Image (cartoon, rainbow, N blue to C red; front, side, top):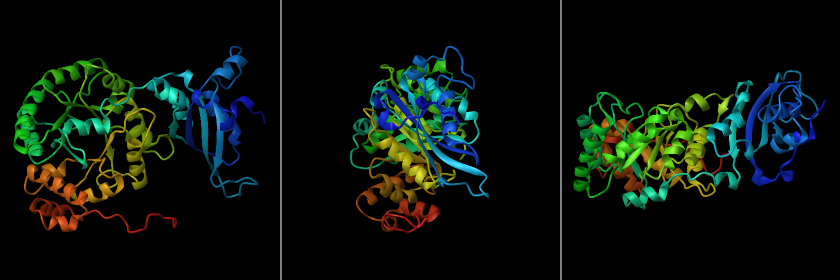
Length: 438
């Protein structure tokens, strides 16, 4: 067996500010040599190929080659592999010189998950960024505190509503629903991911109609409302769409960040003319993270990367409703949005996808006040109408923040009781702080 020592180094021997470290889950045949497998991943994604070529000098290799910095097997077979084991499972960590790709999402992902995404059971679990690499990104303009300052709300979770039906409404119909949601107490309303600039609801007309309705609602409720207009489009139209929306009065924008690409999202976030918050919608991310064997983790594509790209709030799918999502994955994604990341501002997690008033208590237990409750059907489909659906959410938020249970709160508020009667109260399986029983 031959493994080049330069391709296998341990973390203590690395210049930490020179590398982005990738962590992978890999499954291999029972007789695979994990060192050779890891080295093959590292070399394939940097300066080498299956055959030594003349241009691959020692200087090139020292500057550019990926380093395997850790291989961990589970179960850890170290004196022999049982006869009935046909597949072995490894966590492999590889350090990539960040100078190979620079501050570009397209090139970084080409480097850490390019060709090897076609290598069978290889999944990118996480990326660790050095400070000098992170400093190349401006991140969100607003983030959690900036949005709170815009709205004048400091001490509670925020409430988001998405217009339903998802598509098919004209500007006047959209504005009517936006008014109902806003006057009921919604802080941020958004277009659905399917509605951007259709012929039946052109973006400029929608912005004008909705913002007129929002202004009226704000005067009634005495609070400010943001409306995130979907500007998703072909790359060359994105900035024009953003500026058109802002020119017509938009105070917030939305993009489907995975379909337009992370670099396009960053382009919008770093444009000084685009001086309003950007909401990141997570559609199409499931195509990247749902396989247990390949792609990348939900925490990366659904939290860390769009945060670095500059979104101020990010839709996060939940275990509560209509989409499959593990509870631990959901919680980790929220923490990835909120915890320190160099100078990149924290951003609001927006749990959505079948969220009802009965989920508010559990969300606040998990994330505290820095969460944005995202609801569509539970507002527009409330038995007493959209305004009542919004009021029911605000009642739930205020009561839980005051230390009361949803069950107690439902007895005080007609709108909240109607929602709880319709959809119930979510309760996670009982248990203590820790769970070591498996």
